[in-house]
Length: 254
Image 1 (cartoon, rainbow, N blue to C red):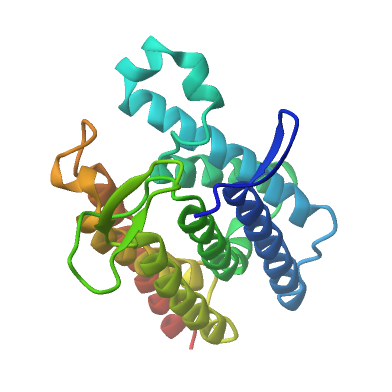
Image 2 (image 1 turned 180 degrees about the vertical axis):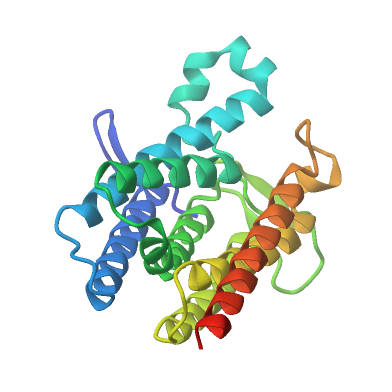
């Protein structure tokens, strides 16, 4: 593991921070390209959307963590706010979505086309984010395993000498597949929200499954061991509703 790439005095660059930055940049390039392909002028909107999603996602993820682990947060709020850990993914999703919608509303843009353009960008960004988790050993790994590909994280931010499921690697592989599927489907003639619905279904299924390999999902950490699975089910249902609604709309138009 390489949690810290280098230090200069008190300044340091972490592998997670670097991979997150690469992920945001990759997502920006994909979003901008898709907006151009759809005839939506990116202009300042693409970077504004990216900035809104980043800020909203980070705030939402941190707020969700503070609510879920309220006793820990109240005991030492400053250390939680400044920590590299302490982000809850579904809080980040909610915060990022709300911020992106606000950006689009302020710029008087339709949400659907941009949601579809963001679908492959989100998958790519998540891939690099999980690469950062793997390289830094930030504790997102799974439960102990005797499988030959089990890994220990002795030098991670959250170290363990026990061989565990390398769930960040699992998620990288799955989201590479999700990106490939979305990239192939993006040129199909479908109403707005269809591709984003596909993303929600695939991402929800992935997250629902992977949570069963994490320690907190088995009740060893956290106050709500099934919260992530519940949110994943909601993602699947909302995504399926988008796909169904857009298919009905397309067939009626035909």
